[in-house]
Image (cartoon, rainbow, N blue to C red; front, side, top):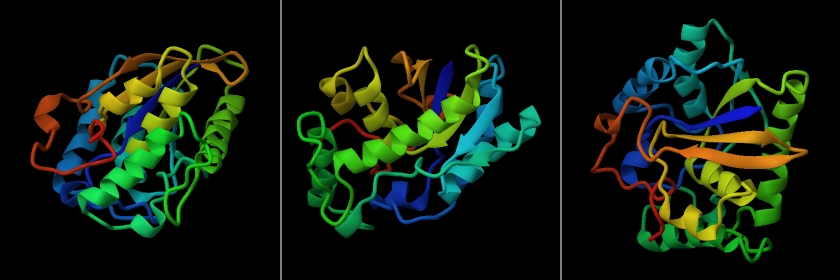
Length: 222
């Protein structure tokens, strides 16, 4: 099957560089709503059999235009939410950014590394991979199915780069993921996953980027 892992549209936390991971979290900025509205046209040629979102409000608002355009109802799946910032929640300083993303990148060699007050690698991977596996199980009868999953910058980067058979640690560090950018994977939980595309700009094009935003979960490593 194919997974279209779409990052949510811009939030005020993305504008301010705040590590915002508390559920349900904020909605979208005006630009974020514009980014979400551009998704249906950008994916017009894609087969989409179902749409899934996390428990965070920004993913619901991002998915709604696509769901409306396809006549689908998105489904909330536990486990797809952002990597929990713990004691770093709502911090905007560079030290917090480095600690948060640095811990995530460290999971390649140390799954026990923990974000202060937040998750370690094993806890994140267990819940996120479990969510993806539960989605895949729903489509097991149709191996050619394609699903859109609206999720989060750090979570998509960490899971996709770690689980993909064709990516490595350095790839995850240097490849950004703008708001509404998409990572495409093919495979299954049984056979494994391969990343076939990693977009570095929003669906709808680079004109929908915000060059003034400070967005550590979507940027290349500091």
